[in-house]
Amino acid sequence: MSGGDPFEGVFGQPQVRDFLRASVRNDRVTHAYLFTGPAGSNKTLAAYALAEALVCASGGCGECDACRRVRRRKHPDVHYYAPEGATGYLVDQVRDIVADTSLSPIQADRKVYIIDRVDLMNAASANAFLKTLEEPPDDVVLILLGRTRESVLPTIVSRCSVVPFRHIPATEAAGIIAQQAGVTPARARIGLAACDGSITRTIEFVKSNERMEFRKSVLGVMGRLDSMDSWACIEAARELVGLAKAPLDEIRAAQEAEIRESEDFLAKSAIRRIEERNKKALTAKNLESLNQVASIIASFLRDVLAVCAESPEVVVNVDVMTAIEEAAAATDEARIARAIASVRTCSAAISYNVSPETCFDALLFELKEALYGSHSPYQACI
Ligand SMILES: [Zn+2]
Image (cartoon, rainbow, N blue to C red; front, side, top):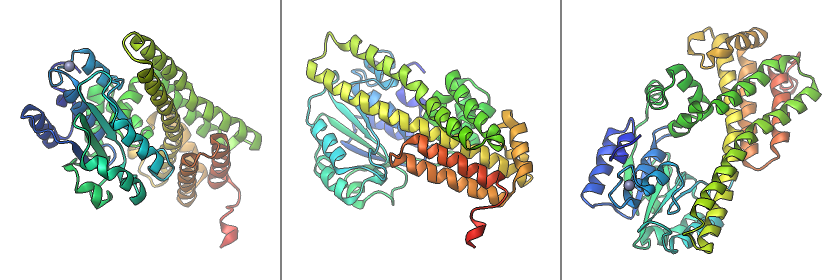
């Protein structure tokens, strides 16, 4: 992406694009937005595009240092938050965000806060936030993201300018990703399955050979599952957690380089704030990567289900078709449904900070039992 219009990249949402572009051009930007739309509707991308237009001295030229930093998600005055609690925002986290809004910007004239999943903000957290939302400091723009308007507390909705995003159908999303990342639509669908439908994360995923290898290794474990004993499950669980951790070193190195680059012109306190934020970003990335392991396993199981249901044309992981067919031949639809339910339980446990090794060990054991076990542990209960 280059050139002078940051909103050009907000694919699949022409109305949103026109609305935001006009708001910036006509100087009608308000202090609080609520972007609503399902996962994969490009809300995050649109939020960063608006942030770029707001922190760049020329309204988002696409070429200056500020624009480039926003595009690399590294601008010190553009903040991104996701819920730190397993079930949503913790009151303490919201208080931290509120406290941060009163600090002066580090580089730009204003600060932008992108606050994801505000549908996961309960009444207590929302209460800590309402005053700021109603009257943020003059140099602050808040961009809240939520799945639906109805799922966000009315006290939050009523204080924001609501921008609805449409659902982007999977084939259209795959087309956008294929074009943007320069990959085949088949690879785009594989990425979408691993990234829970998020277009922004999928573009990053499919462009990275390392991530695609990571996916291959996860699928490799699924292919071996039938022949694994309990010890092999423990070993494989450790392998999955190791695979999820691999990209973190790279991110850490990039963060350190970023700080060295800014050291000369930033105050010590500003550097400390960046370091603090980097640490949180690393934790979030680790969780995202662990969830990708679960998403990849789930997509494999959905493919096995498709073959069982005699719809092989909807298989996403076409490159491991042999393993999918072998698994399908050894199991049935009811068993696969149980296996998919186990993956959901595993994802939830990971979000609750249960040791990921324990979660994946339990998951692999359950998947093996569900798919290939001689008797079902559930049948005994009926
Ligand atoms: Zn610029």
